[in-house]
Length: 322
Image (cartoon, rainbow, N blue to C red):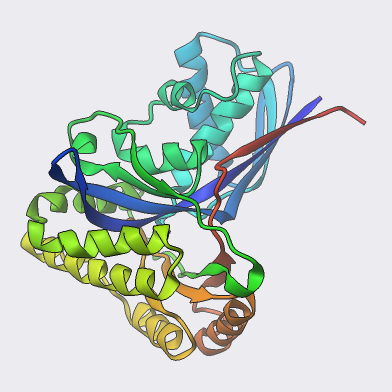
């Protein structure tokens, strides 16, 4: 028998204020995406064998899982696809959850308890978007104050995003080349800076937060893009107040210009990494934008990909051996 695990990506959008139980709560907002995915094929084995993309990091997650459960390393994991690191798409945490689910299956442990999988590999509260994205998917808001206290927050708001191709909300992404001197902690450092900046958010930002969530609930893409653009400006402001200046490269600016000039409703960078994204309506329009990005950025401008929301999170399928 084999287990096939397909995990989503998680794109953090920034800090969004929402009203909850009579107070304004700064929330970490993110959207779970179908691409770039994690794809693992697992089989039971006499020992632990891991091959494929990011196998070195997968071994570290596997060791944490085995140490937590005091079990043996009995599985062969073939990583067919992995989320690129440094892009701010939850690569490390989501790979760990997929590895943990694979090992849970191979050791006859429960597969569907996401919180137990997260505990087994040592994921803490700041990975709330990845944990809940793996578990449920969708557009998510989680309490950033709770994360700062070290408490895994429940989902405060969740919204599915699903449309036919002509009306699809498509995230077109550019993954730039990673400079060789980039520290391994790049994504985590950026996420922590984002979470720390929440203390500079004030009530004046609340209308933008209301507009953002109302547009998502009412399936209004132009209003959603407008609210997200305003929230990006608010996040830039609280970053400055926190003494942080996110880097925007020449390639980033060129990428944003192309996105703006070819149909994107809003554009920006992952709040935790290097990936640039544009939100555009419709599959056809996304193809046109990707074609233009590849042509204008050239072979050294980075990889280009499109994704729609994942509304289910990770999927696992047990297959009988042929």
